[in-house]
Image (cartoon, rainbow, N blue to C red; front, side, top):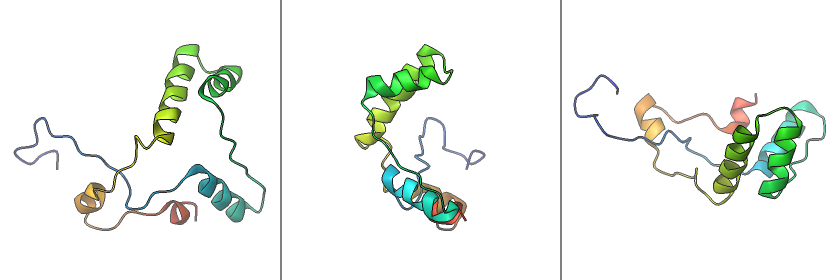
Length: 99
């Protein structure tokens, strides 16, 4: 794709073919490991504090907390199927990725 003509200035969203929410991811991880994993939705400010408490720089923690909120509002959701078309097959689901 990068070496073909006419790509200058184009943006491709490389999302997978299927979406998931974090509670589903936690359940899948629990299922695969046999250990309880629980997703806990935190308010942005609280999440930022947690990130700082585990050693992230304040600026990065703020960026990640803001990104987390935007993602929760659907900012990363994409049904375009661009990645699957670019690689010539369907993408791997999160469940398949976890093995």
